[in-house]
Image (cartoon, rainbow, N blue to C red; front, side):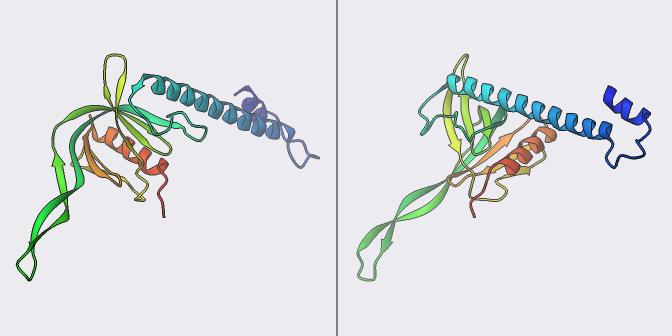
Length: 191
């Protein structure tokens, strides 16, 4: 800020193409930006390590990975879960015999659950909260769609994964929008 005041109060040097004070101000701004980004990254990594130590349950691979960054975390209330399941059905053949075939169906569970959501740059981890530890409930990769999250009914959040569709209630439309934007912006989708 002092350097900014100095630049605005000092007349430009008539023989210099680039004003050294302006260049210094630009370099300091770039350096400050870099330091702030490094601090955010360090805080994110620390929080991710803390989450990993609190989660009970089996991960396919550790939560903390060199490429993984914590985007945001918080509580979400799951209000509905829709999954694809296979059901058996009897089918009559032309000769009168009956065969059983598997038929894909949708199964809906409307049992509300309070969950902790941990959004990283490549997945969303959902856990059931306990007093000190949290129990791993689901890991969503959400890479099947360009926009896996959408807003429904004002403060509802709909998340589409390759195995399920999850419906959450949030405290406000603003919170739902924050989650939607974070998920859609940071989760890479496969082409």
